[in-house]
Every structure is written in C-alpha cells, then in structure tokens.
Image (cartoon, rainbow, N blue to C red; front, side, top):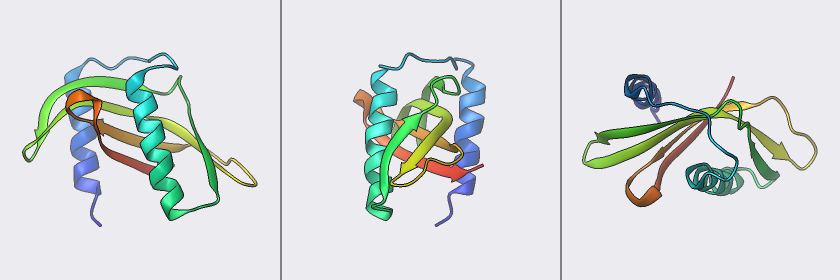
Length: 112
C-alpha cells in the first residue's frame, strides 16, 4: 500500500493552512481519531490495549480541501503511545484526517 505521497500531501496541506494549534484533552476531533485509530490498530494487533495521545505534540489544523472528491475539514498531526499488554514503547507519529461532520477518513501511524 502506497501511503507516502498522500502523507506528504497531508503534511503540506496542514503547513499551508496556518491554523495549527494545541488542543484540549476533550477535543471531539482528537477523541474521534483516538477511538477509530485504536480500533484499527487492535484489528491488526490484538495485544494493543490503549492509545494515548500526547496532547502537547498535537497540531490540529482546519482545512478546506479535498482528496479526490472527499472533503477534508481537519488534519491532526502528533504523537501517540501505543500501549501493548506488556509495554508502552516510544511514541509513534500519526496523521488523522477528518471530513464533514467530524467523520474520521484516515488514521495513519508510523514509528519515528
């Protein structure tokens, strides 16, 4: 699966928007990305028990763009700790795209 060009586009879009800011722990967009990201990770690795967002690393940018015909309204970049049954290692970087009405379109995690 080729994700790199898309991820590069997302980073460029978030930098161009100029609206990035740190968010509160109870942000609905962050909660949506956390819950869908955790479910996706657990489907691939059942030993994952939790996903802890590093709130100080989060940048949430409002967007007014599209990926093909799908509107993208919010881009979240940051770090998250993926907790496994035995350990929580180093944080992973993640990207989360949200569309209209806060619908999560994509969560993507990568080791640093």
